[in-house]
Length: 56
Image (cartoon, rainbow, N blue to C red; front, side, top):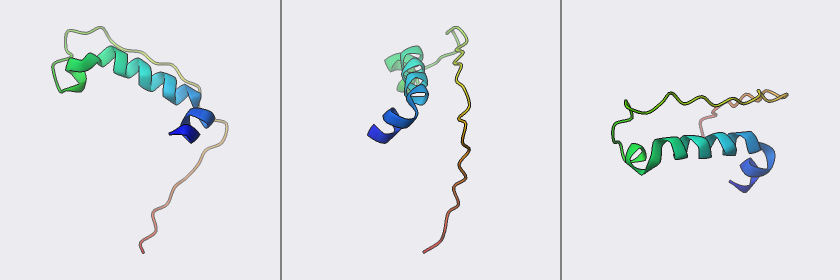
């Protein structure tokens, strides 16, 4: 998590915005249909990483 906060601060900010928007009830699975539409803007990273799963 520390690495994510260091390398991709924008993702952490967006995550906090989503958590705040959902609130405890939304996080617990409660209805969110009455909430305003959430819009989070973030810039795409300059470097694109591809992850490939390798079976052991």
